[in-house]
Length: 163
Image (cartoon, rainbow, N blue to C red; front, side):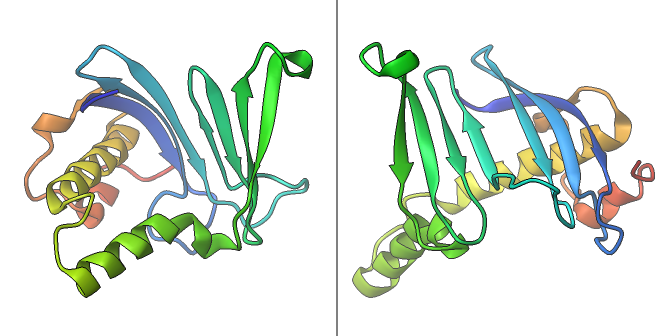
């Protein structure tokens, strides 16, 4: 979808022991003109069995289950019953969600070379997340490019108390 240009959203606290927000609902606007919704919540527990992550796209959805691992990928398929194909995703516990990152790190250390996702990409992602936090506090669209260079989690918590 490209580079994130601006964000707006709201944040709140579901876990009193956490210093910062533990839930967010945000709209991300990309330089390409596309937009996406980012929702997250950390909760002490749910009454029903809830997935850890649900990633929705225009042609499918990935649902990742809890600490025990596993998940499903749903894709449009005219030949499948109801026009939707469900492919099980086999994972082994929570840490398996990071298998690609672990393997890339090991490759860099053992074989030398650069990581698939470099420091520039990590910093860009961090800047987007900090801008999401700022937008949650100010409750207005915030430009990623305009984020203050010295912004950090602690400085953003002081803007306005979380809901």
